[in-house]
Length: 68
Image: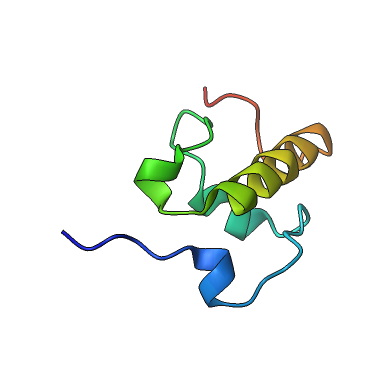
């Protein structure tokens, strides 16, 4: 089985923008939880940046905290 490539490293994305709600929703499951690295294939540095960006987006009400 091939190892997944990091989406952010392959596309040369250095800063993960929390205002890009569509990108944030790619890494959140239907219950609005952040998906783990094994599921998404994101490297550890980008996963930390991603989790902070998702939390910022939640606080700014761009994505929801929970799904109803």
